[in-house]
Length: 435
Image (cartoon, rainbow, N blue to C red; front, top):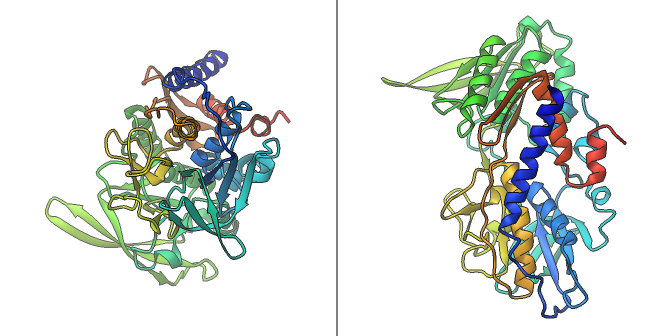
């Protein structure tokens, strides 16, 4: 049974990968000579890192030499976000979930990693401005913007002071410290609130209910239903598990403000009061709930600076508008992928799966741009969805819903597939526990 499921998952990945590459197959190898060139990639997440690795692996020749590839990120570690909670509770190591870029790129001498902040882009001069121990300017022949989004708490009074986002390594270790403190408190005296009912919020709610067995866990979501955009199977499976775990789900509810409050049962454990605004058929009502642990997975915005300091066209949320070939509007050598981008037509969801597929198309289009070849349009191939429902439980849909699993087998398959999707073979070996 397990082997058939694993084979099906791997088959789905293979089919999806082959379909994604079908659009690339007609491209002929450039024949004209290239001058020495530089490709700058801003952002080292799923999209940026995979673009760099794909560019490095393309069939460059003496007449079409490989360009210098510069990968820029403000952090020194790549973070495989789907396994961040496993790192938090010790089910995965730091090197499995968050290897350094230099370790990942040690076998790619033509990729240079630069740790720094992006302060601006001048598309007229083909230049990016970086803060790397001081301001510096770097010219490019082609640019890939993959800066993603960052958590946004500024719009809610008290959120920055009392809510803990869960997006990076620092957040992971901070949550671990808070859980260690709460271990000294009887679970029945603990109130945990998670804001945001997307995949991350639902996964956190279920894992918190498992970690703090008798705690009161509440999931707050402003939409009409949790996990918008998810498959019906995953949403229904998650909803059933939330109910089984006794997690209170508040939909059509948003956070108005957060204020400190005294914890009478244990003054050493900080608490806060959350004022919620609920939408009802009669209008809007308000209520207060208390949290000893408040986790925030709702809302994101483009990073300050960087592409915002440019003339690149953006939508109202700050995402850069692109053509079907991922090229930024009114440019011919700037490509934008991942959460930072928004296609005017056929916009894809903001997921790691989309970013990784866009990375392949962006890499080939950079390859074609440097040699004045025709660019390829991006076409998203849905490979399926996976989510954690606890340490030994998960839900998976694949191949357009033809394959659906949940339970322990799905949990094992999820870790296997994530291992296969690691950016390098060496990292995959580590993640699968084979090295």
